[in-house]
Amino acid sequence: MNIKVVAGNIAEQNTSAVVVNLFEGVKEPGGATGAVDKAMGGAISALIADGEIKGKRGELTLIHTLGSIAPKRVLVAGLGKADSFTLDGVRSVAAETARHLNGIGVESATTIVHGAGIAGLDDHASAQALAEGVVMGLYRFDKYKSNAGDSSLSEVTVVEFDQSKVETLRQGAKAGRVIGEAVNFCRDMANEPANNMTPSEMAERALEVAQAHGVELEVKERPWMAEMGMGALLGVAQGSEEPPKFIIMRYSGDPENEENNIGLLGKGITFDSGGLDIKNAAGMSTMKGDMAGGASVIAAMQAIAQLKPKVNVTVIVPATENMPSGTAQRPGDVVRAMNGKTIEIDNTDAEGRLVLADAMSYARSVGLSRLVDVATLTGAMSVALGDQCMGAFGNDDEFTQKVVDAGNAVGERAWPLPMFDEYKSQYSSDIADIKNTGGRGAGSITGALIIGEFNDGAPWVHLDIAGTARARSSKGATVKGATGVPVRTLVQLVCDLAG
Ligand code: BES
Ligand code: ZN
Ligand code: MN
Image (cartoon, rainbow, N blue to C red):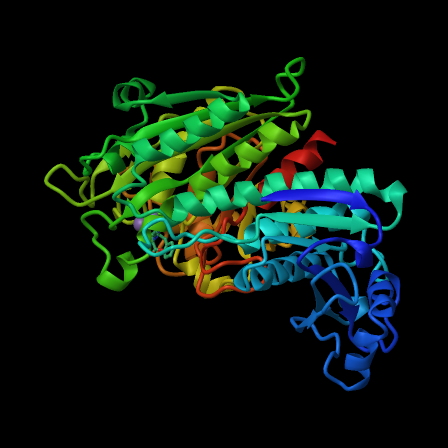
């Protein structure tokens, strides 16, 4: 997708379609919409007067201009009520208009920035949300469809009347394209079937990022994991024929200050059968997506490496399948994680916390001072919060709030859950330091607390995306299938930390 920003009058653009907008209840359009209306002899106000255009959110009205102005078509997008219009609205409207124009075969479209006028949204942020919406909204995973055609829409030009705003809009649009592409890269990984998205393939995708954007990459194999004492990760991996990979990526945005760093960790279970505590058919059907957390941190790195914030970022993905077999780990086994803690395997299906235990221990051993982990960790997460927001769990309220704020700023909501010490007794073991499950109650919290056993006191936030990693239908910038959550939150957080 090519996104340009130019100065000019939208009504005079030589293009097959221009997009303008209207807030609900506006009878006489102003700004760019007013200019187009005027140039067309009042065609838009006539449709408003007839009640055909109301400006409701989601409303799209296509007008063929038949030579009355330079653009061939005008698409009027309803924005809903002005006082409740946010950057989320910009992103959604951009996505929906892009999908609409793509659907009717438009190759190149011209648009104004929604929301920067009456709604008073920030120019940079609006342009960014617009670009994110276009890129994310047009996403499709159709590589296995024999009859998949190409997307038609390949160029969007943003027109701004005020020349002095153009440079800001350009920067916002560029950031939005980079971030939207990272989201789609995450979606591509998480939508890919598990027969192709193996741990080795995850490492390949990380290599693509490393080569394209100049970040460091190390991919560690089984013998290294054994040397490091990663018994928890190796225990999960031992049932699978696929070799596990421990993926490490490093971006140095502040090389003079080593300690100005953050570790982004992601669960990389490329297929979760449950292991010997095997899932049923319904439970297993979406488990190719159990590496969505890992995909999100690799994809966030793709954007971070291009946006270049002044902070050092290390991405860590423990990647393996969780399979039942003659070599698989058994319920009742005891493993030792890298930090020395022993874990009784109460349930082989609680594998995410095991691989993250070693990833966390490793992160601390290499001096990472702030940690965020992302995981499709617990089915209980969907029970608690559904698909409207992620769960956020942490050991440092200020840092947790920073992560939640970053999510709110980009329209990916996270909600903090309590981490009371009293929950910890739920996962005490008779024979080991802890066991890997905490019983039925508060399942997402005990899962988070178990990961927290390995953070060695560093400020840490765990995001459980079990409910939000996959969408059942398309809406706004969300496309059915893998959502790419929380790539945008992670990128925003890292940029916030860089100041
Ligand atoms: N990957 C699953 C969690 C999951 C379930 C993610 C549904 C997305 C949708 C995880 O590894 C798992 O199996 N968790 C168990 C934990 C339990 C055994 C303590 C669960 O949630 O049932
Ligand atoms: Zn899992
Ligand atoms: Mn599992």
